[in-house]
Image 1: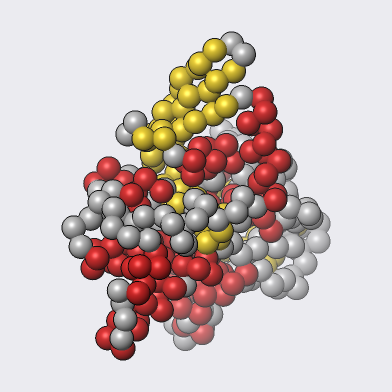
Image 2: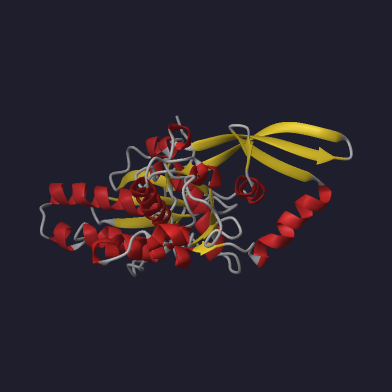
Length: 321
């Protein structure tokens, strides 16, 4: 999957080659934060590697040549990684969608009165944008652009809001959107089964639990502390895998001692619920009626528990007075 570089943020003049190098380094750092969502290529303008003038100064080749010698080896190698991350050519899987738009109508997207092919294609494909902070106008979570559509009925102006990544720290604002993109990539050719695979971002889930020394830390703690550790681990894993806290249904189940929070997701047409058993440190997954189906550890492995026809692990999905 691709993100699109905001080429306008690469064209604003800077006052030194050092600043240009710093901004290019920052571009790699910002884009690298998208890799956890399976966005692994950055779409850039044609001739980006050879002719594109960065920050009003020189092309990429000239910038790299200016980093000669051992002193600049780290910066030079870092910037060279751009060559492995970018795509100048429109990907075949995007060509049809873009061509259809161009046949039906001519669409141009501008930001601050400057047109951009990259922002236009990001708008057509509804994919994220990556900017560098060459100016405060690019320090925004959403780029509010003007669109101009030319059709048989004449010119039609409009607006579009593109999701923008400008900092390696501004991850949370677009987390749910990026999760949905990744989910679409991973399950494009197969159906996702939340009962079998609630923690579907396997690598990310593993990193979260390893960083928390889970479940080892919980196993060394007393019962009260274990509940706190379970709560922290469950929250991190569920949010990382695109499950959303459902405040209302959690409230309906307040009287159930085993339920701490109930989570739902937007990836399936059928309602599926996860209730968190804080005492056991487990996910209890229920169907759209709130009926228990399976119990899994936080990493998604089955616990092997089977409650049969017992209703003690069901949850209430409607308020009852």
